[in-house]
Length: 241
Ligand SMILES: [Fe+2]
Ligand SMILES: [Fe+2]
Image (cartoon, rainbow, N blue to C red; front, top):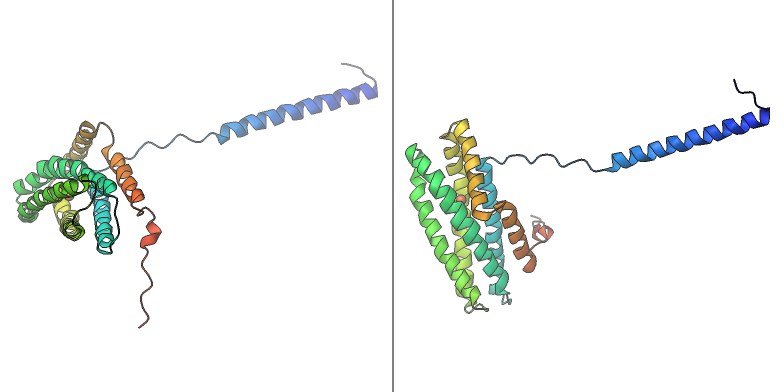
């Protein structure tokens, strides 16, 4: 046992206490530092085949909303920058017409409905006809906006509105009649395989996640045309009656 005078013992105890406090402080700081590190992001959840098709409609509907807003502005005499409209039409061509319509719906969804003799198959000829008409209108939008100025604003506005009405009806029928009937005609295993197949096609076609990229593109178009702020579309209160 170590015998020290009282004063020395008190100094030793004080010194040891300070060292312990400092060590505890350092330990707590280290622990806090460890805790402050953000947790790793959770693994991405799988998107089912039907959800995939419907969220693609979401992107296409946002293009249609751009078209409808643009038509209204043109009728009001506004000057519209054709560049973002051309980008919107190009997005509709690549993501909507070439990928969603031809590679998914016409290659997988519609043939399965026909084979299963689903009542929803009766809509298929009209749906395919509307895909074709949509391509014609997209081509027209690309041609008009490719010239750098919109020549006949009234004719252009009419085409944008007609496309909007057609495709809103088209996508709404697919969401509520066609896709549910398609899902019904597949087993759980076949549906899971379809999700994988759709994902493979998406990666092959776009080299990465095509949906995320399409979402960025439509957001850029909205931004360029002053349509990005959702709050601007909140309706006015109805009149008192
Ligand atoms: Fe379609
Ligand atoms: Fe569709």
